Amino acid sequence: MGTDDRRVAAVVVGAGTAGLNAALQLARRGLSVTVVESRPLGEGGARWDNGVLAWQYARAGLAPPTADEVHTGTGRTFLLGPADAGPVVVESPTEHADMRRLNDRLVALCRAERVDFLDRARDVSVELVDGRVRALALSAAPPDAAEAAPVRLEADLFVDAGGRRGVLRSQVPELAAWCPPVGRDVLCTASQFMLDVADADGARAFLDGHGATPGDGVTWVGLDGGFSALAVGVAADLGEVSVLTGAIASGEWGSGRTILDRFRGANPWIGEPRYGGDGLIPLRRPYARLGASGVALVGDAACQVFPAHGSGIGTGLMAGAVLAEQVGGAADPGADGALWAYQTAYHREHGGTLAAYDTFRRCNSAVGTDGVRRMFESGLFTADMGGSGLEQRWDEPSAAQSLSATRAYARDPGLARAMLPWLARCAVASRLGAAAPAEPDLGALRRWDRRLARVVGG
Image (cartoon, rainbow, N blue to C red):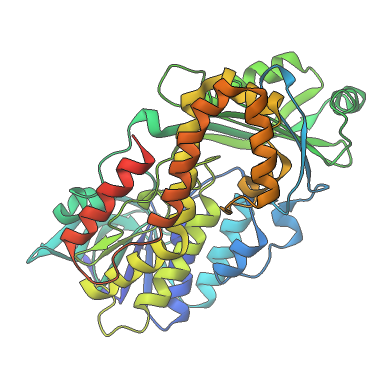
């Protein structure tokens, strides 16, 4: 069987939501695009629910979700610390999107823009010419084809949307040097399942016990180490329940699945799963280098994840729009200058928030379960703090918020000694993370990255 040789403007490796939106936004700017996916088409990326915000859909160039894509609740979340400290009640605009349905919508939008797809891809290898990726060799199949066949794809731009390990970046020396593998102490082991409610009275009793009503969320943070979460959302009709769990994957704490299984065992009103899954999610700030030698990184491959709670869908979707804006009109979309413009634009728009919350996540890990409990009991953890995290925005505290924090620290001076240095670093990280060098200068980029690493920690 001969090799299928193709030439397009851009090739996207990975058909999760980040890769599909990158393909869509590039195609909308007139580029011919082929998407390569290791799984059957429509099964790429996350297969569970994830919180995405209206402003993120808009920034990503997407219409709001359709009714079948989201699980709508009251928008109210009861946040609790260890030992049921709290609650802090937060009103949040987060919509819990079914990633399967969002993936289906993005595939349909891509098809409308004449994006080509190759699925069941294997053995993807890059062809370098003078250090730049000029082609990919792989084995893949068009949708509905019975067998895979050898394919060679030439393009000006290659987009690595292949998840936290990436597919292309490790094969490109220039990127591999800037993008080390993420260690387990900076990974979140997460589980999310939508399950039947087997006993509506039991579900109602669970909500009543926390002062909540059907459609509200009940979330615990800090149960298994400072960075950990158990989020429960019972549908308004008491027909189904979402359970989301996560913890650091270092091995010191339980996994997302063990936290979920423990909660299900203690709550027999929860029935059988409808759908869901498990994953390992990078929690560090984005890599300094987001593109080089014909390759751009988006999504988990770029560590474009909100570090405070490990949500990468919104940040990855927006990366596709930023990429297309910066390279879509370039004569050579894979040129170093075009990719540097993408890198700078993403960091300057989102890097400050992500660096600040990376620092805050490390703070929570440092103070541990006991420290998180004390944050709730002292009054330091407030609705403003919880709301900013759920809305994935970093705001400097107002005068009233600073006064409230001062009173909380007066109640627990030991917590103040532990927290204040970290919070000062958060403020510095928010400004420094948004100050990536605009002009192509690897020396300046490395100095910026090292300064940021010293502030953020790790």
